[in-house]
Image 1: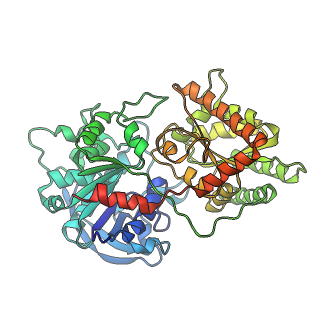
Image 2: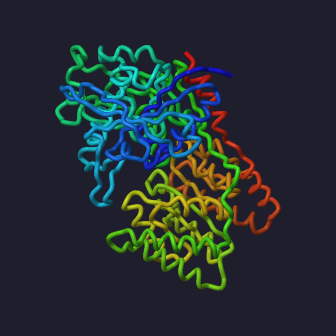
Image 3: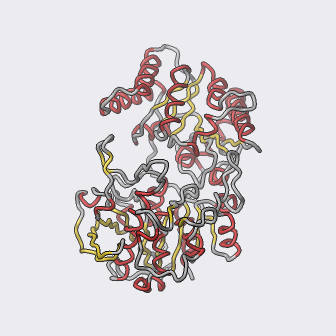
Length: 530
């Protein structure tokens, strides 16, 4: 099938090039273009350079982009960047360099993709960064610097400013010829900023745009009407709106009921209208299935590898981390022990409330979800969690690891450690409070490790309880915690008493396929065709 569409994807992350990934957006941008190529599409991707991506080996300077931002004429530089893999090489990768896109993290001694603003000024630095980036992209599209285009595919709130410019900036009228698609990766992050009165506000970014007597309602946040909401703009102004799983598309039509249910996050009314207009589509993300799987390690081999990785992380920190110390101590003791656990539960995750709340929260008996899990696993098993994130949650996990010998918290991330945990664990835990799609469960299943998941969003769409994994749910947060612990006990009982059924579930997990080729066909049919 030859669809002959030229698509430009605009995103904050792109794992198709080196060092340009933080979360799931990067995975999607890395993988979907190759699948779209098989459907006859040509995809290009553009991100900010963040002060360093344009310096990667193989980058080539193409031209200067001249654009208007913050009331004055500005310039940025467009680079073409070498793809990280052969698959990523099936699309064209660009970055745009500008001083506003640079954020140096002195603590980590590195450039970061996202900024951490103080509580009183959420999104301030990033909103200005991406508002400027979108102005540069709009100018580049007008000048045909990405070649002829049919579709402008925008990812999350960072890219939504292009829809504002497309509709309200007369100099961007050329963008109206393109079909626009807006993908929601995480509705909880919306980029809300003031309309005026701040250096990071709509008035400061685009003072030359005339909005008439007052700022239109479709640019305003529905709760704080004196603020602009980029996520809402994306939902309201795009020709097609897309979420990364069918269940998540249904869940966000309902109001959120925190802490037990994350729905539309204040934008459910806008999403309901998009659904009624036939613009909202849920399409499940895919997963890569390499011909050669990671070899499964024995527990002794896994412990040895993780101990070496942990020592490497610790050596790179300026101060000794208590989390590293506890993990190393625990791994060393396990390595020396003659009797090894016969059950290994694993998690690989960002350490944030979305992923960890059910571990931190108490059940109906007041005991935390993590303590319940560790009690169920007992002395015959171990739970290994790899990840970084919020300091408070990292502290909770570290404190629990210090007092529970069957829990190891690896407070870092490395591909080698992750790959071997996916391949060598017995059960992958993913108790997310909400999950637009999720990639961890797909990778674990691919490696033959069944998953225990909260039946929400993409986790519900990929894990079939009792068939290729296990699930739980509950009407309240405390009941969800109880259900998680109860489900784990049932899983452990099944593994001990019905080994053949357990083996069948493991085989079914490994046989499950969530293909990008299926996603790409739906992209073309539901999102890209007018």
